[in-house]
Image 1: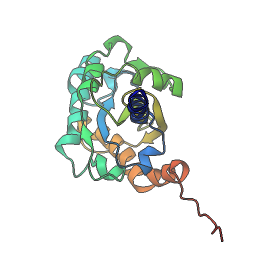
Image 2: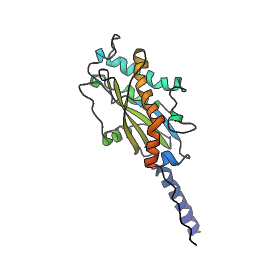
Image 3: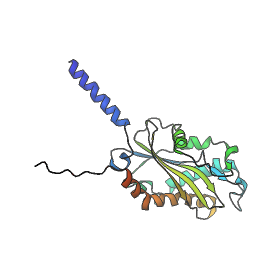
Image 4: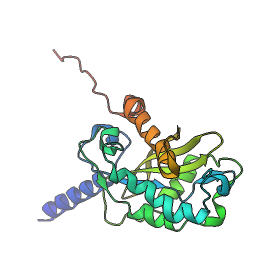
Length: 225
């Protein structure tokens, strides 16, 4: 009886460990893990220069960015799935979606700290600290988020950190800093073009590079005879 109980406890421990022991390889080699798209985190993003000139001929404020454009840029991905196809970007049949943690983070952005003279250039430790604050509740599997670093109107670029993480432990599994070129008419579409550009880069070339680097490769074994 004791041996049976010990075996059951051991199985429970092994199952519990396996549920949390996600590795970067699992992004590319394990379709059993659900990938959840959490959206674009703008809560640490900086406008390089003055917000007042960020919109060109359309004056905007930091409050406009936080309350109008951050939600709009996130919902546009869901509203136009053919144009912003997260699942095809990472070679998945489908992805789950939960924008609530990022909505909370974006809504709490201090409007007096949006402007900066230079891009902050976040490091892995910074990205890990941002992810650790997400309220992902009962979700499991692998999380995917774009963390916006900066938007520079003069250089015509936006910087995003593409981040895959273990939802249960909040451990960052893969982080890549990428540059997106904005395009389109109007403030919303123009800067949405920048993350659309990043998504195209991932779909067309970056995903292949990640998979080549991180995916588990099958090893050939010599016959024993």
